[in-house]
Length: 340
Image 1: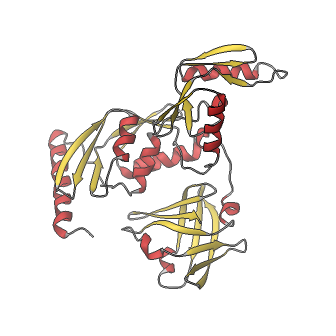
Image 2: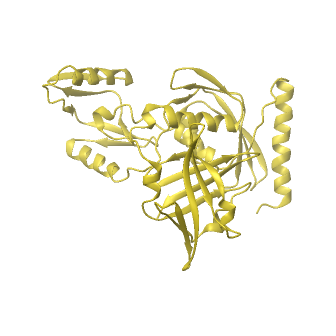
Image 3: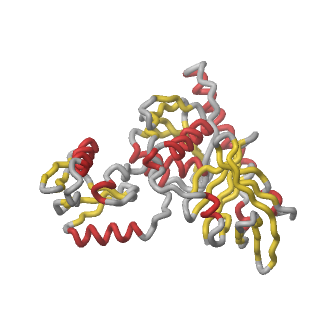
């Protein structure tokens, strides 16, 4: 826990920044909540800023990397120069032109692959390419790029370092710069985005983000409705009843993950859930319903510790290995499950 003086320093720093913003713009009354490298919003924003790797899946077949422009492919004996994302449509049009072609996309090597995290790898031939795709196929449940939300840069981020009690400000001008900024955050740094921030949604509409909750809700909307984020359709009830789960993150006004360290949870098809730690088990109940077009996971336990999880949690996102839930009331709380 941070000493009181450090908490006070953080509060004073962001208060002074807020006062300065008010003097610069009397109409800027937006809340500026502070977050850290462990905050859910931080990881969501980093995924928004990842490389767009889904759009060329028709060529490379991988959600986690893309081929760096420019390069050439051959489809049905036609050579196509791929110089920008707009040229993906030429490949698709060629594939759809006839039902009798083999529609195999042949890449002209060498090429350079760009991973979701901006790392680049030189690929000299088909064998190396196949090995790379096989590697990524081993990790189907990585939480990858969140598509359908583009940030209009520049944006400004205020930073407070509790280790040396120094405050600063940084202007971010691109997705790559934002990704690397978040990647390099350490546990002693607190950040606050300067709102408003302008984004473009997957419909191409420009929207204004006024605070952290607005940003998180915009990300949730993109996850739910942008087709590029929903390539695979899963059923929560089927996913949650397979295997055992632990809690990698729990936030209720403050992070309390360690309270549930060592617990495993088994969700059964009869809507019972068994929580076990060190050979001691407790049986509770779970229920998955849809309320106002939002999937909810209701948990009910009776013991003092596990009953703190009792809630009708709103589903944020999930795959076969991770389930991320949140609750928005007076504050935003989070509960994550991860398959063991």
